[in-house]
Amino acid sequence: MSDYLDIDWLLSDEEKLVRQTARAFVAAEAQPVIREAFAQGRFPMELVRGFGELGLLGANLEGYGCAGMSNVDYGLIMLELERCDSGVRSFASVQGALVMYPIHTFGTEEQKQRWLPKLAKGEAIGAFGLTEPEFGSNPSGMTTTAKADGDGWILNGEKTWITNGGVADVSVVWARGPAGIQGFLVERGMAGFSTSDLHGKMSMRASVTSSLAFTDCRVLASHVLPEAKGLKAALKCLTQARYGIGWGVIGAAIDCYETARQYCIARKQFDNRPIASHQLVQEKLAWMVTEISKAQLLALHCGRLKDAGRLKPEQVSMLKRNNVAIALECARISRDLLGANGVMEEYPMMRHMANLESVKTYEGTEHIHTLVIGEAITGIPAYR
Image (cartoon, rainbow, N blue to C red; front, side, top):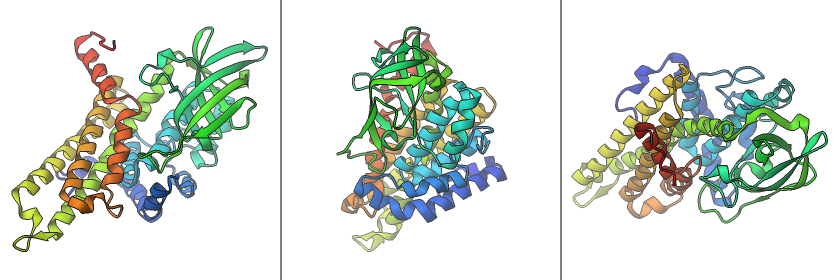
């Protein structure tokens, strides 16, 4: 019932097979552990090797052990992962779009050979260090510095709200050098580099979120991503991640909608009729399935554009902004339809709702994406 417009008709047999493979893995491996992992505030690390074995990490990258799937395939994978939990999708999204992509796009051949096969298999974990304690939506204000020192660089500064940071073997870190912003590969255990996990989160609990600290951290020249120069390079990585988010949140919306639809059909009140027979309930279900259908079409069209090399960053902003908003509203409406039961952990609404509050904020807030779209249609930037 979550494919109201028969969007499957627009998918190839290969795309359906990719989706089914991811869906089966999530059902067998991720769904049985996610409630406990969320309650405990831990990412289920036992899933990582399975991600790698199925080619779900960096799935839309070519070569170096990557699966070389299409961008639509990749989007369908993100949808199935977030149907389970945003934290599960976020791990794969960061690994592929924010770590493997910049190494694949901006790295040397030696860096690609060293890291991409291990990251693709889940034998190594990566993180992306851009956000700082005082600079989130304005990364151009970063204060982390890189100072030339012989055959290397000295990094000083701090990054925060970094997914996978505390468990990462390698982090793509952005710092301000004498020639501008530059990307570096910083490895776990390097002198002067430390991490600390953030605790007490009410959202994205099944995800590792950390701070990265650099105190006279010496990085060799071989750890510089040579083509990762300027803020535009970092933003290209974020565009990749935002694309995956735009697909992923549809999964959270579908999980909430389907849970509510089935509940409303089974739940009986008053004259022993299912509450799904009431007009107000049907109005809410109709709103959700309509918005989900529109979100699916938007994601699929953006995927086809991306595979054709035609997708623009401002179009990705529309995808992320719209789909996160409707997913969050679906979670809220679904919780309402379940009444008091909607707040119980046996139902997914509150978990998805809490997660989506973070997804609405990270990788560009809703407000930032609104201004990106505004600039695209008027030619006038309004960020100040």
